[in-house]
Image 1 (cartoon, rainbow, N blue to C red):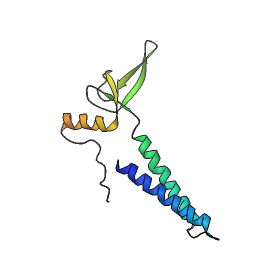
Image 2: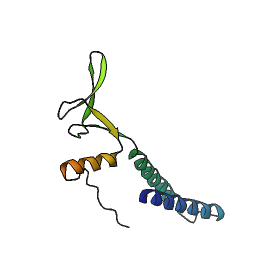
Image 3: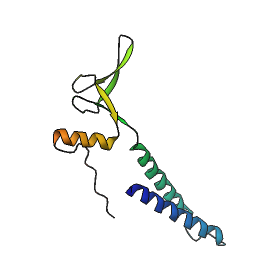
Image 4: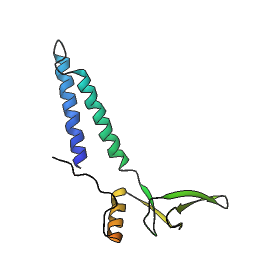
Length: 115
């Protein structure tokens, strides 16, 4: 939610600066800075989309080290940590909750963002 809010604020600022530049006889805001803001916006958007990609995990040990192997001409997911084959897919945040519940600590520790 916070990332979406930041993305919206960034887009509004880019739009505002481009509008001001289009109305003035010469650019008021440096166009290189506007381009840098657009790059930042794209990076945030890409990160937001990346977090929505489901992850495949081992249901036995909750490892994310799952690899497709061929057994009898069939693709099978296999855990590289424990060697078991039962796997599932979920959102990364749901997987984090499962991991914390089982092992009592977070696997991914993300830095706190300042407001």
